[in-house]
Image (cartoon, rainbow, N blue to C red; front, top):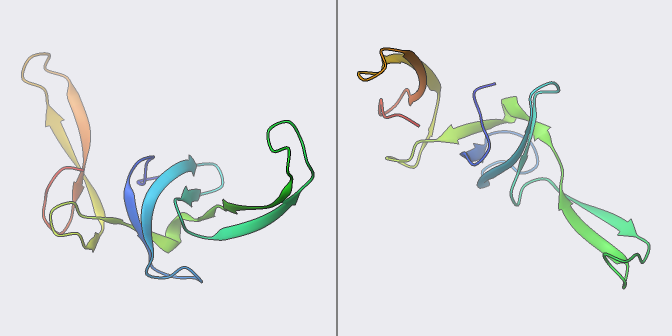
Length: 107
């Protein structure tokens, strides 16, 4: 999965189309992500120690990773993600970095 936690993404399809937010959690096995302020669901809860009042709580639900695209930091537009192999000068080890297809900048 090319999208990681703390990435800024834009929703490209579904009820929340056009909204942007930060990725809070990633579920690679099910190809789903939770994005801040997107796909809000209401849950009725009984009073408990954490929430003594009870009532209706609004919470973000997971959406399919194919419905979001990462935002380029430079242009603030949605972009595809590529990979580039970089060799570290000090250790000589290979490292895989994610790059933006639009600007070529590392993510």
